[in-house]
Length: 263
Image 1 (cartoon, rainbow, N blue to C red):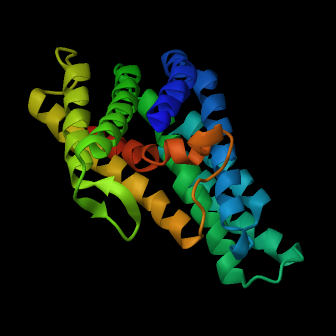
Image 2: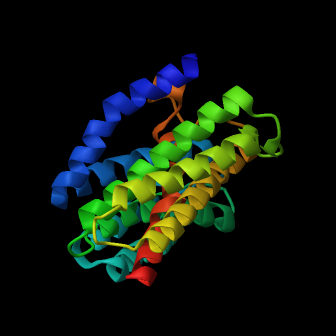
């Protein structure tokens, strides 16, 4: 119950900020995404300290990717992200780290590819002509609903472990319930909005829900590998920012390309 109350407090504090930034769009949303990206990168690089990542290169490449997404779309975002590789090697040349180049550079690029590149798709979703605000709202709400229902059902009736080697607390019961709830959230949000048809909404809901679950497991795999419980302490007993956005890092890109394919 304490964990659920903690989730409610985090949502109550963060949801108005996130939804308000999505509603306003533009530089408001850009600033929010940049802040979330930098905090997430900081948490990841702290966890991955044994790899000796080139932190400044990751920050620079992450901001470049997000600026590219905001100003020029997916192509510019890709160009900004690729600067991470160059920056990481340049910083490695002058750094005092004794970590192998393979570990230091790849750890740096991984953080930017996973976190900044993933969050950048929220900017791209919001910039979809005519229906961008609706698309961004839909994905964010669906992931929140999926995560909440999966947590509640998993705690209440979960018996069969979903992936015990990576995340022992997750169950098949929670996964199925969360996936169904996420799909329903997409259907309800898009119903009679003249954006996607009902079958297309169901397809989008399924892809968002499944990719959100994979995003959650992806972070869990890293935390287990690096022997940490939470990505940070910014949210007190609720972990770090990365713990709260992990599902979005897979769901946002999946949603963007699904919508692009359907429209």
